Image (cartoon, rainbow, N blue to C red; front, side):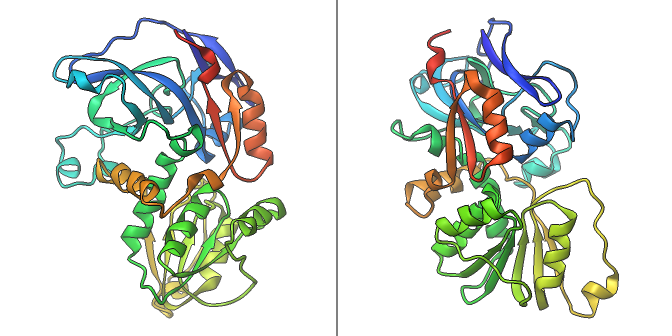
Length: 328
């Protein structure tokens, strides 16, 4: 069975893996049709975040078709087109039972804490695969997971309709946040230091921010130390910064930077089960967000190395397609 994997630092390709995939109790088998690449995938490709071993099967923003079900799963689910929710909480701890599965101490993160879903066939809990319209394209399905991250950040912030919002970072995450807020009629600008990414953002009808200004809300979506400095310098007195992007570089500030101006700091990490994916799917089906506008390339999985290079060097999101793999 084919799978896509990191084979060395800055090297990715198609490998052969064990083809014995069966649905256990409460599970389904999915014939994968593709997956999206995100910033965490790129950091592992570059070696900035270590993987347990090489080769390492990648993928967490996946989608496909259910071809088999295990015990205690409705057989009628066979044939469903689905997207995968790749963060799987234990389901019984305090965090999970109160609706905060993203904080579960025993959570599984596909493609991160264990091998990813970038293979022809995968078996997963039926609770974490969500049905979507059969006519959705790879460009749409590859964006559901990152859109769920953006939806949670916006819902948590509860931004007022008359607020002025700055988003730092013009990658997919920043763009999705901007789209959601624009859909509500909220004034949004994006700060992006990459000329190519800034041009891409502007082509979507999202205004670019000028230097200076004081904003009621700042969403930091770059995960960089420079992005934090821009956020802190751009928030208005009494305003709030929402940290969405993650990075390992230290960020510096003093208590005076926040207290004297009564600046609030919030953080938002991924999404919670199952509402996060439900909200993202609804945002697409309702027309509130068109994720296809964010995708700049759909690349055949056989060319995964080129897909990574495109994602690193170009603006917009990359989706890998397994459609040419045929049947396993």
